[in-house]
Image 1 (spheres, rainbow, N blue to C red):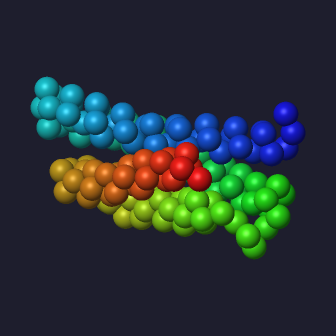
Image 2 (cartoon, helix red, strand yellow; image 1 turned 120 degrees about the vertical axis):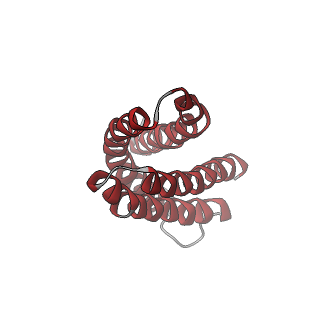
Image 3 (cartoon, rainbow, N blue to C red; image 1 turned 180 degrees about the vertical axis):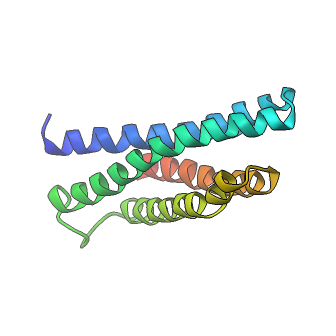
Length: 143
């Protein structure tokens, strides 16, 4: 396995962790938390976000950097990229921006004053990123 294989493996593994984590959190974990009282839910969310966002702070740069490395090291640069690579790059950068908006917006507010308001904002933005991530996955396979 050469450099391209290593870059592609890192890229896909980090994407699976990010999108899979959002899917699990949104579809499985969040509805399951309804059995807890609000203070317990908030405390649990605090732990979940701290751990998950730490993982994403590592996965996101690896995805972006490995994507650009593959483009320039193996695909000949930006000229002549297939449509799906351009769309994946755009969606990946938008997802990164949404993550940064979550982290420095409602998550910062949540850490300072945990409550339902920031949780709702985080939930909505994670839903946006989940849709973008699933769409990016489909585009990767179609191309």
